[in-house]
Image (tube, rainbow, N blue to C red; front, side):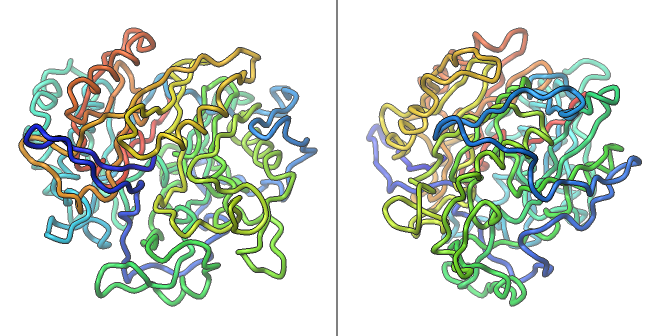
Length: 516
């Protein structure tokens, strides 16, 4: 979700400069060299072995039914054995990752910081972990160098969310708990929603657990003019050489270890690893557990991730055009791997992509003014509250400077039906008006550069829904009231995530469920 900042201080509302999500990503000098587009090298997850038999091209794809939907005749169970459970299905555990400074992605707070600093980010992550760990097991991945810090935060209450610690300690015997899992060289960044695998069930094999790797490549990273990086940081020559230069240099960050995380998660859970022919991130997929998915065009139909969906004349990326079969190709692959029968497409960010070239209609290359490294993940714009019911991001006050963009996404949702033919019920979930203040701290304009203000990025765990809190009393309460009718027996737990949000993400971005 692209963001602007508007924060109330001294009883006066101050309009901050509009910016967008996750342009915080910073450079580093260390990254293993490998192809930016391709299959995961370590693909032998679990005792069942890896699935290297992904089709080079999907079977009989049909054209999209409209510009905003892709659907197919429902296949038989034997044709579509894999199914991604809905997020509200029972979990065995949730995975998160503890922010590290090892790669220069996160750093201590200074006058030049464009976020709240690594200390606050870590405190928020532990608070989210405790909120979830009160209800289900939470596996927090930690690099060895950061273990003692994680242990200290786990043992103490934070200033921003003190009641979460008390509730965590008071949980029932044998319920939940935060497990610190030391993973040497196991990850680079904290966004496990994007970097980890997507767990699915094999419905033809007693619902055996499987895992899908979508070939994480640093959010379509291909960068390399070395501009807008932190002082002293450069893009490794191996990455610069393989770049198609269709994303700006400011988006570079190391991702070699993140690239291997899906296979590790599969192997750790004895899950057969399925290799997708698509490159995308978990935050790019919203699924109802019943065959309907919502995707953004901007994040999935992207040449840095999926060049096979484009015609690229003479290899010139700026002239790439989307193939007419692109959406059908995506649908066929998500049907094969996740059990998707219908995709509802929404634009995502900007107008990308809409046609040939990089002109007013958008095109293959990231627009020059794009500041969202994810290119508009759906998990900041739309989320299923229940099958047939979708919460969509709205901003009546335009406090995020995305009112028009959100309206465009809404228009693509309006009038849609799901894979079962049910008309979608659309519920607005309004963004906060004032944010950037927490526990006596008000972020500077610079620290608010990438602030992700929105409630759509909530997470459903066993027994609770974890919802962001921005200390806008009215907006926070309204978000809870909007979600509550669809919460069932789940508690709604709000967590002040100033630090995480300052890094351009939210609760959902930081989590990955392991279905029971």
